Length: 124
Image (cartoon, rainbow, N blue to C red; front, side, top):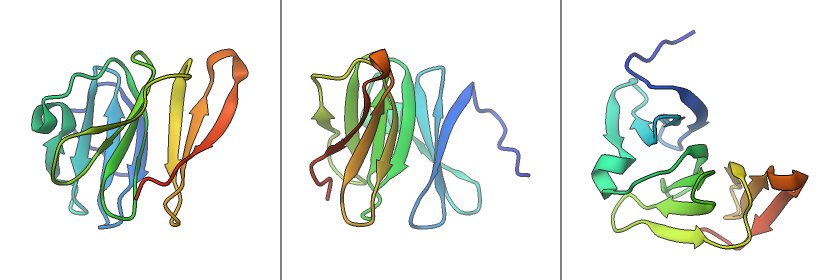
């Protein structure tokens, strides 16, 4: 087992195509790590984005990070270069999980009132 120091309430983790990984934290941040386990960046610092309660995270085939925010009821895409893109801003009650398929599909788990999983448009 690998221990990553200085995480504050780690919640969800996702592998990245480059061998690294992404971790969401209860304190309101998402951190990106290299395969050597070195911190690459904090998304809230890099993008000056304020998360409410980041939950599910995934990384698409292009290396963009997708984050479900339970408190703000949104799903955002954070490209390696450029500004964050809000993919979903309405209709979610409590998005807690996201998954990116190798074919560019995005799946969002919404636990609000047990509403289930929705497949959204292509993220790539």
